[in-house]
Length: 412
Image 1 (cartoon, one colour):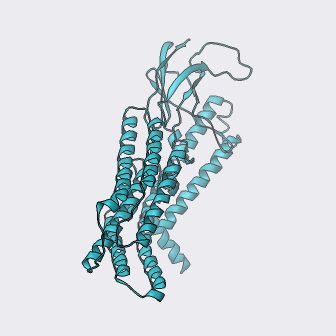
Image 2 (cartoon, helix red, strand yellow):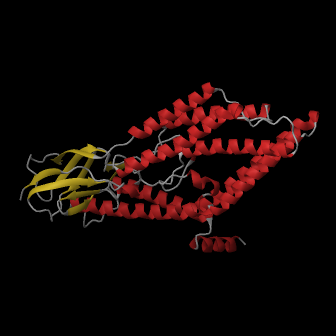
Image 3 (cartoon, helix red, strand yellow):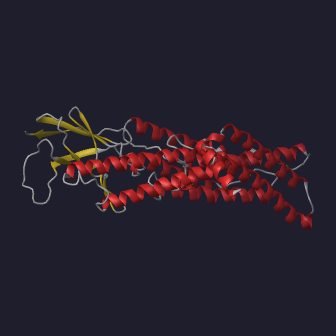
């Protein structure tokens, strides 16, 4: 029986239909890459025929790691397809789980007071909202279901879109709840603008922040002032972190402030279910300040990569000399490895344009990482095809952005 299941699992994996096999294959590829990197960093595994040539052995090591990194990326894409189906099912379970939690909560609180029309209206609104989310999720089940509208163009969960979606869901639930109360003949339903102005203002602020943030990022990417590298998969940490996975203060404060005010609105709706949540204008102003800080952070983050200087890389014991063909050059600057591009596969896409020649930057492994390339320095051998004379040098990053050009003198 176990053998048959293993064979079936293997067949599903070949067809891309086994989520477990996709994740296992990706984990094995990552483990193999890390083991290979540390082995090569320790000086083991290099062919004896290349050991006598530092340049040849370094290029061979770089090619080996590049091939292994591409294998990891391919396995990640296979695992991503299976992961999307799992996320789709998880979002549906969360939506209908919320309906079940509401039903249980209402049943427990109705023990002393009895079931009322307000409870029926709230449950009906939750069912209608969950049904709408289910229909939308089925249309985007290949992209994670309900999470699809929250993903940015870089395949990360957008903080501003998520916050706007939360406010939209609360507002739709409140309107549906009041509509069902009206349909049931409740006499005290209040849909007046005076009470709901605060909620409407926050909803407009959240939507405006999402649209403006997307516009700022798109304009800065088009102007090459911001480098964006596509993520292999979305993660919940994207809500609070930058593209490198480090906590971002602008995102953190926006999520915390929005979540706190959202809880206030939800509590207000629970206490006064026959009217829209009456948010104080002080809380609306707090959300506005938080959104402004977030958009200001979006406007200044990142930057265009830039070369400051280029020097001849000197090994210990070498004499000082001008740059000649075959020498290593060290490029100093900033922004060579943009946020989100520190993974091995994006590093293999880093290219140095030396005159008419495009030289890929070799990967130099060290235990736990890479000594080359880094965000501020690149070391690359000067190709033999570069003609002596004055040559322009620039760097093309993994995001496709080219730096300024610096001229160097190459001697025979």
